[in-house]
Image (cartoon, rainbow, N blue to C red; front, side):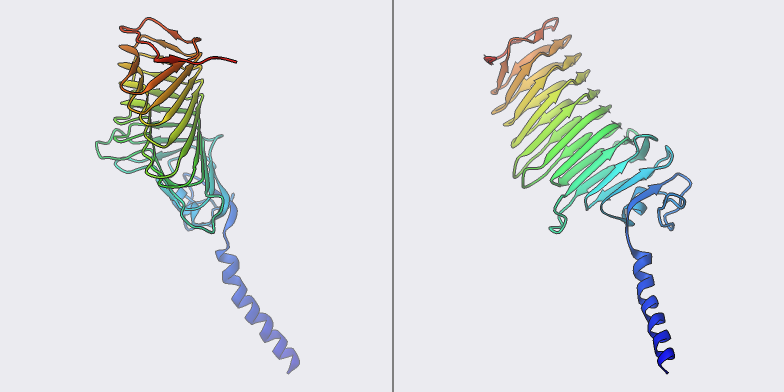
Length: 302
């Protein structure tokens, strides 16, 4: 009787434990163009879409691409890394937003999303959508990718509270009807860092609204309606090339734009102030524009 009781106990324990093991989320998962979302998203049995993989990836885990396939749009509600740097994964998002980031779970203390090596294509749809929308997060890093062909914005930052930090590095944002990067902040303050990136064929390459502090360095803002604009926000442009725009740099009401070591040329108007300030270090090349314009003040270097 004792042996039978022990055997029954072991079997019952396994019966309860097995579903937990099966449903456990992995810290690293994989996707492949020949995968299947019924798979466990392992290296040898990958999923087919980002949406399928994220459901099987633990908070703060990572999704990697095994090949340069299209992996579908994704709604991110937990801290996650999507890294396809070596394979250049892609998202075709015709008529819908490619990536939505909206982390509101209080138990997720990091609220951090890192996206690397992804091409997001809106396919020139006329339906309102953005490449990436950031609604709620503490930290977002977007690196080594392309955003192309969207009707609304390339990256739309729409947070409502806190002090989120957004980092954009080595990105090409192009052929966007709206703005390359657009901030619309209704609460809190966003700290935005942009480096080594290209903005072309947009309404405004980098467009900032209130409650935004941004630094743009070593980037190209070319062939847009406006290269960079600030409204009730703080914009710093360092070592950028701003050319071929209708207006190179525009400071709207309450905006403060600081410029240092930039080349601002071949624009309709180089520098334009519409109620804001443009403060120059005096080390910028503002020349060769139809109307060069000028700064409203100067910065003393120490």
